[in-house]
Each structure stands twice: as structure tokens, then as C-alpha cells.
Image 1 (cartoon, rainbow, N blue to C red):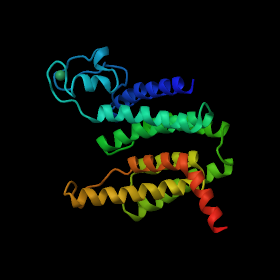
Image 2: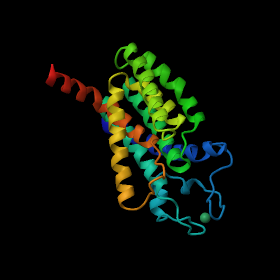
Image 3: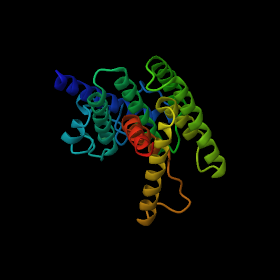
Image 4: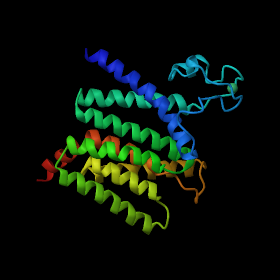
Length: 251
Ligand SMILES: [Zn+2]
């Protein structure tokens, strides 16, 4: 039974991941997510059902458009596969619970803003405004810690990044601040600090790697949203265990 539900959750994630790619690429450009139907950006041929099976269409057509042979971005199947696998991850961690649902909503938000932030260097307000009420209600109904902790997490996360934005004179966007305030609300305090720590560490390492390999200039900004997303997902699942283990060491 668990395996069957697991497969279902994985497929659900793959299909939604495919939709999230569309949302992330169209919403910042001010386009509708429903109309027009997806087309090959190169030859304009409308994609049919067989072109839109997550991951598998890409593999069958060897990463090329079936009509004009133009290469299709490898990020599409990667986004789909990651969404599917992270949905499965939440189900395996939490089973059929509210915490798994909150986790999958968190994964959904994270995938969309990661693709949008990498592609457009911005975190779309419309996406945040869509997820804000969903996550507000989910945490109010099924808090992981006390509501005060969730509230402190949200406010604290926003304030810390706001100070960082002022100190770095624009190195951090308003989108990052709003996103992390929402993440902080879900994670609560002090777990949101762990998310920020992981995000900064990953950002630092990635920045160094990009610079050393000459793939980004000194002044070229790196989007921070994806790092906040990864840090938040890791902290959501493992943060409480790590923090309680750490506290038991020092107390
Ligand atoms: Zn084409």
C-alpha cells in the first residue's frame, strides 16, 4: 500500500513539476499559465500529449523537439524529476499527514521560485501571493511548534534579510525578503536560522566555484532565492532533529 501511494505521489510530483516549469517561466513575463498552449519556442509547433509526459518525453526524443530537432532545455526534466522526488521525500518522511501536505506545498513554492529566480533574477510577487494564504492557513491549522515560534520565525526572517539588504546596498532583493519571511513562518524560530545558515553556506560555496571556474564575474549577482529554498527544505525536514540533538549536547 505504501509503495502504491509512493508511486502515486511521485507521479503527482512529476506532473505538477511540469506545470511549475510553465508557471515559473510565464508568470514573471506577465503571461497566462493556461493560454496559449505550450509550443516549441524554436519552430512554434504546438506540443501534444506525447510531448508533455514529464521526464519521459525528454528521454524518448533525446532532448530535442520532434518536429524541428531544436534542443530542449535539460532544466525541464530536471525540474520535473526534482519535484517528483521531493514529493516522494515528504511522503516517506511524514506519511499521510498534514506535515507532508505542508512539505509538498513548500516544495511547490520552492521549485517555482527557483526556476523563476534563475531565469529572470526575480521572485514573482504573484507566486508569493498565491502561496501566502495557503501556508498561513496550513500552519495555523497544523502548527509544527507553538504559534509564537512560527510568528517569531516569520518576523525574524524578514527582519534579518531586510537588515542584510540594507547593509549590502541592494545585494538582496525585496523578493528574497518576502520569500524568507514566508519560509520563516513555516519553519518557526529557531529553525529558520538553520535554513539561513545552510542557504548562506551553499551560496558562498557556489559563488566561489562559479568565480574560480570563471563562469561569473565579480560584480555579477547570483540569485539567492534558490539557496533559501534548499536551506528551507532541509531545515523543514531535519532542522528539529538537529537542533534538539545540539541542545542536548550543550545543556
Ligand atoms: Zn520545434
